[in-house]
Length: 339
Image (cartoon, rainbow, N blue to C red; front, side, top):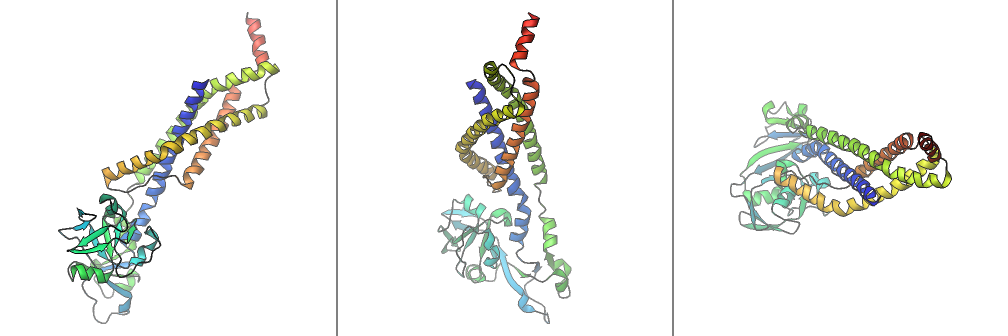
């Protein structure tokens, strides 16, 4: 029976691992659309242009910024990389930064994907046009696929002067800006959302279908294997009592046995999950340049527990009805009769 127990632990561990990966991918990718909009469009409206027209109302509501994709790139952690460099209000990205350290006029914020590409971290040296600075923050931005550097205006002008593409950001709605700008110059968040519509919906659907198939296949295999296991237990128990157990007693024994199996499977997963998640995260990044970290979350535990409850309940009911409808004593009488 040791082989049966080991197989059951392996099956449940596989189910837990697939659940962990599936729920992690779903949770991470489902939030990417909002993150993309908020990091590529930190204000309500963007206006392409070098200057504001005369007579505009509330000129202080418009913030002038610029961006550049330097041909020679920048040197980050002694590696040549080619990011998009944006001047912007760094405080707008606070929720996606990896530390609570405040930003200032000397802050250099780099995207997580860029940091991973260059094996850089906070404190790494970065060089703009021969001027050396230090990375102060890393931001989980989807802007330019994460190959992005955010600078305050003062630093951007210091490194690149008036070069680059000029634009304005404002929190005013599009309708309030149309009187002063050509509609082709204006882009609001809703239009931006259409441009960056989450393309992961098919992936998510595939993951959900795959996880569902795995779950039911696991339930089926577990029931078949657990039938052998429980049948062995029931013979031992019934031989001592000569009568079948009540369903309550039987279910209690199933829950106890399965709890130990589930605990063993969780222990196995806890050992292998970290290297497995690092491997899968790296594989996704290397093949797509998308940083989608695979990690355990509250959703993973909720889904795993729900699947386990379903598995235990189904196994208990199914095995009780199909395996031990009759007591060992009754089965013995039938055997004697047939003889």
